Image (cartoon, rainbow, N blue to C red; front, side, top):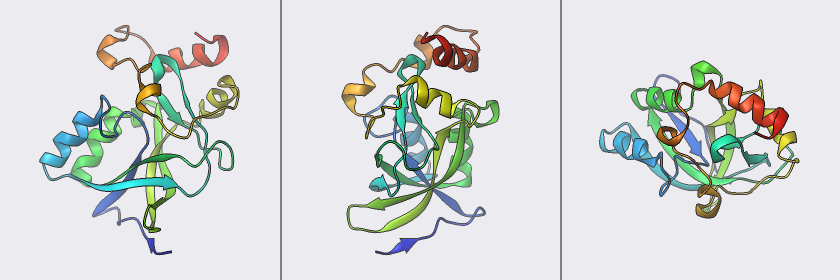
Amino acid sequence: MTIVEGASKSDSHFIFTYGTLKRGFPNHRLMENLISGGDVVFIGEYTTVETFPLCCGPYGIPYLINITGSGHRIRGELYKVNNSGLGPLDDLEGIEIGHYERLPVTVVGDGGETVMAEAYFAHRSFGEGMWKRCGEVGIEEFSMEVGKKYERKEKRPSNHDFLQDIRNFISNGD
């Protein structure tokens, strides 16, 4: 097994996507724009080495939960992203508002190559609560079937406090 270390902070990052940024899903258009601008390169299909919970919250949004050893080995896609491409991804994922946080994850490709990457995990302020709310039952992959429940941002109520929607989902199931 060959281990590829993540690129240094000054160069680029390996980003593991598992949800709506994957090919064929609504937010992949951002990846396509970044690819055409030379900021992102698709590497291939990869799977997490360790198991993690993956579940869907309000509006069918997928959340990878940082609880190693629970859930499944998660299938997704690996991209190499330069620093210019990282900003738009962080913005989409709401890094600065506490929606997701970008954390290290080790993934393995079909050929056995292991890569130290980063993924967007549910923020620590609600991740565990989300997992419990989902009955501690997760999915291995955000598939097209699961993705049918996803509501695009423009279809969601405007002027909402999205983090409050998450808190309501966790406490009430709303």
